[in-house]
Image (cartoon, rainbow, N blue to C red; front, side):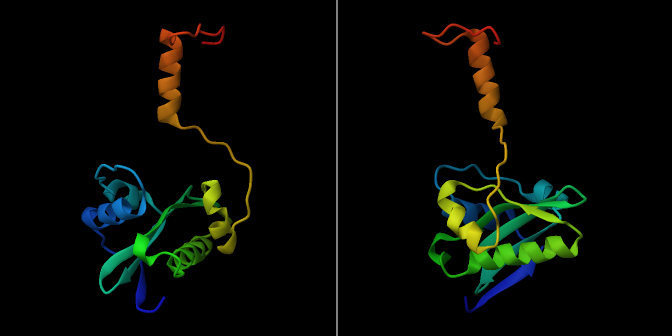
Length: 153
């Protein structure tokens, strides 16, 4: 997209990131302090148009061969203009230059076509929602109405 500038790990404020995420991700959100996350990242890429943050992606890594694409986000009115693909491409280049061999990303099925266009292959992976798992375990220990605890509870 014309007029979009991409910057590697620029100074970005919590207010800018929280406004971007509030626009891009559905549902209620609490403001976050992104500082601790960004300080531990390999790097991150921001997209700006006319000085306004319109896109973001975080690149985390294990310090070795695995890098992880996290929170790719594009402001709603700027979608379908190639910004997301450019963010992913720049994150891929960054991970490669840093010595990573693999770039992982988790995504919802509705986003599969976007990630295929970015060069990702689908793979089987496992996932545990730690907050949900904790709630489920607590419910099993107490026993939920109409349900007997199982032998493995």
